[in-house]
Length: 135
Image (cartoon, rainbow, N blue to C red; front, side):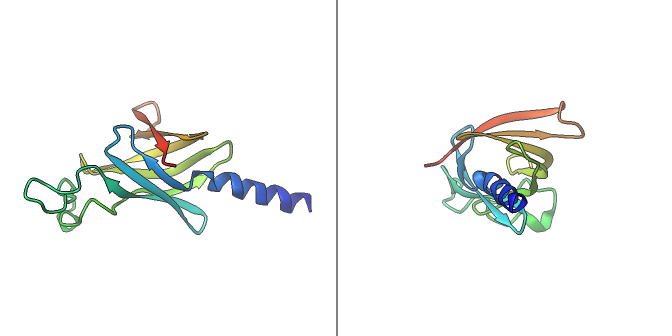
């Protein structure tokens, strides 16, 4: 019974990341959701959704030419994160539509702040930013 309660508590802690998060620059909101036991995030709102021609912004910086015509809004930016305990989510990737690059990523939840660390190779070589929970 104690083991079942601790597994349930762990799942509840893992799900604390679910919901909408405002990016550090305030230009976008990312909806974090769960598929099976992994966590993902898609761009659910952007401050300026259209280009100068009034058409939806596209993923035109993507190195894959076949993906450059897809809209940025709704794009899955966070992929395949696993909960590692202590409010840490690891082994996932983050896609930056501004550069068209995908990075390894680690996320740490601290209350209503989600600390994002994108990196290449090791975590020391990367960039961090804080996202704020949307209430």
